[in-house]
Image 1 (tube, rainbow, N blue to C red):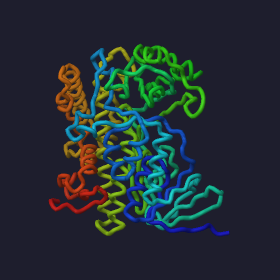
Image 2: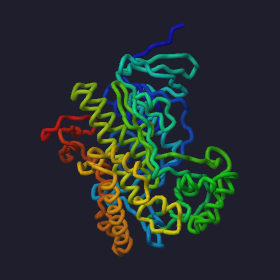
Image 3: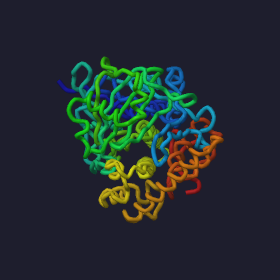
Image 4: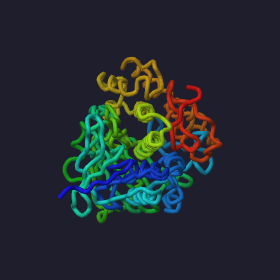
Length: 497
């Protein structure tokens, strides 16, 4: 019996934040969109600490912001860190950015099973055909172009979809990402392992920072401590891959030993009990979670979210990069489907902006790691830029040179290494001034170029979502490039290009 064939404008593989966001942004413009998700929601994903631009920017554009506001997720005002040369914790507030002031200077701590379910339901509400329990088998290719895909339906039947575009949003375990060509390159600098679990009744910081993410450096690495509710906390230890022996054997004993190495986290968990049942009952390990694909597109196909790239999670950039990439991809798809710009220009704009944002966060995080001053720790010595291998820096230069960083002067790894070291020193000085400020002013921290760069595009997306037609006209990010429309959902030729 022949497989059933259907036709859509866009077929999205994966219903997580990247896939559901893209589906909502394209479907709400009247295009035919189908989402194929292999699991049935709600399902477990590691708890997430979000950034304001995701909530007030991308989710406002996709239509999901109000549903998220009604879900009762804890409000997060920034991050608190025991990191760097200072022995005392210091707090990073989202209000450090002038574009994220007032009510939009907060984000959420979310349980991903709930958050992802809200986004997927929103995609359906915006007009996407969402199908859960469906496993994609392969692509339909005609020459160089992708023309659709095959999949198994929830009832086990073999089916076929013809689509103008296929978007792989199926995450880091994607089986399709390599179909765009290129290779997946892993970062030596961020090649680490994380061991994590969930605890009830851990301590909370005083208001107004009660629900901030807490990141604490210790000799063997660093801990995250994410309050997901009044009582539930996600706790994870990140160590270098070469220190894998610290997480071998009994995971309960391994996690407890790492907690005992870190006095601040041990104190916060002194009266807590680990969750041992339900979706949070398992102690889990994650590895190799910093990488990029060397190409994100081919004719008829795009990669978004973790299928394309991911970088170290210390600043909660995972869902940000996933949803931001989906916004960029949706602009490209909407524009091409409606004939506003040609496909080649739209795809180049998507990939250039996505790589730039990835590169900005990569540099930001390298600088952040570099500023830690624990000279007796192997973990932190291994993170030193000057001790890093040249091939890793060369690969990074190839990734961002003249595109992601927005600078044409990055011609070699040595120059980049010097700049990263300078950025780190600048960042550390800004943190010192910020933490020492009695008046709570964020100006010293924002004086760091890596902080400004990391905030820049997120703030732009947020302002465009809130102001629409009243937002300032956008300049092209790259010479001869495109600009976003006033509503943030299309690319347009620049009048200044």
